[in-house]
Image 1 (tube, rainbow, N blue to C red):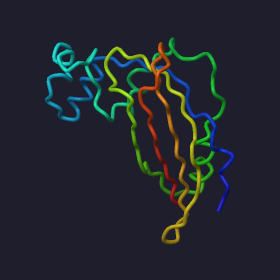
Image 2: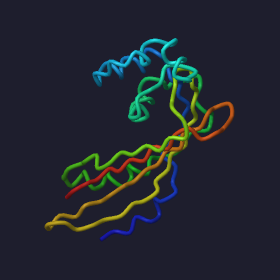
Image 3: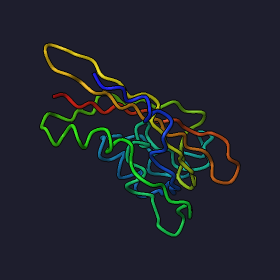
Length: 163
């Protein structure tokens, strides 16, 4: 078994996203939501929200729909610890699995939010199962309101390589 402890604490991301109404509504449609507050600002406001809310799993995709280059921090990260762990393993074959995804909310995400995310590796370890070595890389991204710096949501993801 390999010791991957040197990767724990390494940064995986540093980005800013804008939560826009169109992608939030499209995501709700894709998940077959018929609730009017996902499409109508007045209905969302009647529920006490300042904008159209995003479904709870939206943080999984928000970097794909709300990442605008001009808003990104000037500080660029060097390297990618997840790839540094999994790349050499994949060079020898095996499977990559998305093992788990979890979200912890301080408040709902709503259209109009601008969030800053800082991600890091929080765990990296191996287990043996049925004669296969499985390598787990667990990352966590804390998303905070860009202006107030208040934490909004924490996203935790587990990627597994099975040899």
